[in-house]
Length: 86
Image (cartoon, rainbow, N blue to C red):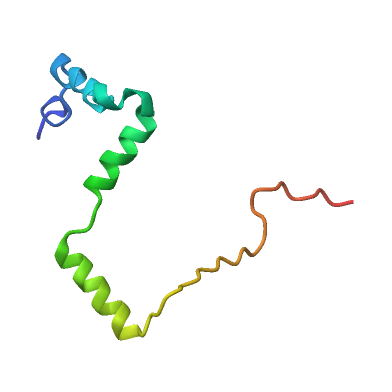
């Protein structure tokens, strides 16, 4: 049987020190943390060339043309509480 501590080590100060790496570089401080993190995520999640080519090929095969309009149809309102009977 494997020990719990082996797979879930407590956070070390070294790991916690890297939290500060998510702050903007000094040249970008005025743009804020939200902007900085958005830029990091945009870079990290960007598709590679192979995926972009696959998506472009699928779009061409489906005959997609621009402009493309997306429509979301909402059916019902699960956010509201149901009215009590009576």
